[in-house]
Length: 214
Image 1 (cartoon, rainbow, N blue to C red):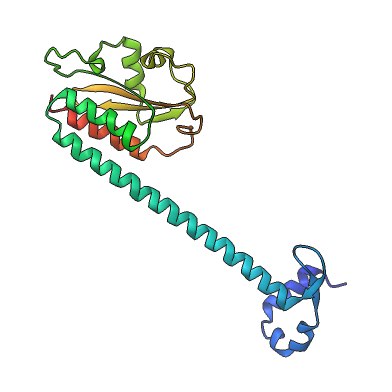
Image 2 (cartoon, helix red, strand yellow; image 1 turned 180 degrees about the vertical axis):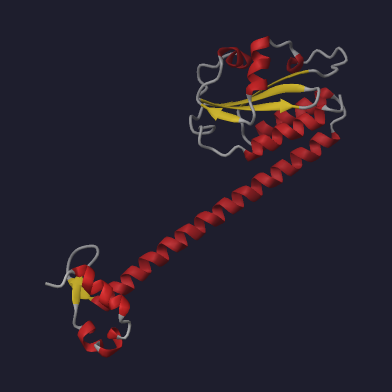
């Protein structure tokens, strides 16, 4: 008895079969892929091609959407980099970072702590002394980290934090200036562990470079 695999192999090895037996193929009916009546094999192939085309169109729309989102993020990052270059004081620099994240990137909660810079006696919350454990957390980060939990001492930076559900920690690692930027959201998926961190990494590098002037 000939198996289905043998028939399939024979058809693959003999592409001229379809030309020799056109009438035979047109008389073969197969089940409709979505149930119901039987349909000619040619119509079944058309349905398969339409479905593949639909999948390709969906994938293309998804790629276009991602491209547009990346372009939008790139434009926002560009504006932020220019604003950081223009900042002439620590206070202006901190304002640029936090205002950009809140207004441009719609990050509802931002906390930044920096050490190793000359604040000139400025009374700024970003320059409040941090503990050794907080410094160790920043030093342990090779790259930004996103997730649903952060250390209690970092939660305290936000005051009331019980409603926060996801966080991003961005290390600020300059030659002398060090720090940690923490973003938070009530949305558990905003900074979920599986999101990309490329733009966050660049943000940390830009802030570190801007701080080097002080």
